[in-house]
Length: 322
Image 1 (tube, one colour):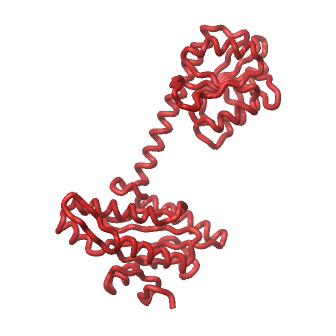
Image 2 (image 1 turned 135 degrees about the vertical axis):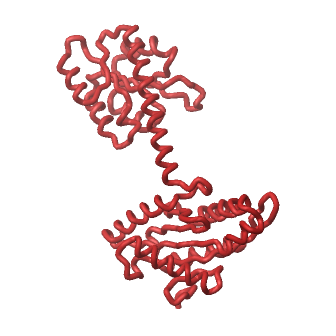
Image 3 (image 1 turned 180 degrees about the horizontal axis):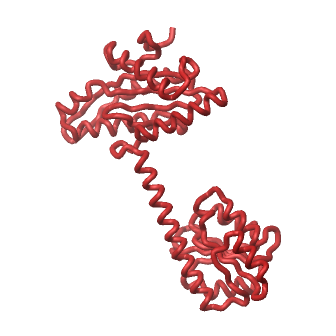
């Protein structure tokens, strides 16, 4: 089997060939290797393993009759894959000249094109070229779609999740908590006296403060937590599988981390503090994510009303549990 260059130095497009005939492999390699890097597999099972591991495969060429996993079985597996790059990859099936049954079945299974054995060299190169271009178009469209999704869910300044994305994630998490009796907490965070920062140092410095606070938040939470900027100077943290005590401990760590940080801009060294309101689904009389946010927002207001630079864990305005 021929593998791709592990150094990444070979810039030729990659074609995966599933074929157990050494003669066919040699012929295809001879006629495609000038323009393409041929990755060889001896059967459908090995081809599937390569395809799953190598995200840079552009086109699949498969014979029909192979041991372990046939070309038809490989084709079905590809088209049923939940991974978009695999499910949409162009697949060319090689069949015998008089084998209309296999050709029709491959068409029904989702083949993009056919090559008749013995393969004509000009036809081989033409069909591979067409489907390579198709593959690149599909990949570019998918990348554009992902970029649009990312843009729609990301705050452009801080690169955190935006309000809409945070709300969608929270709604999904509440549904999971209600179904599986798990834990979920949320923190609402507001930078204290942020208007004074803008007035004194300018909006550019204010933006730098927002970016720094976002970085501090991202650096202290777990991988599964969701951090978002949901307003001008307001942030939020969604904490799956976190009870009220765990959320309070994290909230205090965040408060201290921000209080101690010095934000260096082009013209000033700035220090800010934050106020935090928190709520935990299992500890509150709530049924929806909106209600959980309302509790947290109410406590954020209490934290600010009681002097700022503090966390509030309940409706009495306390900063810690008794």
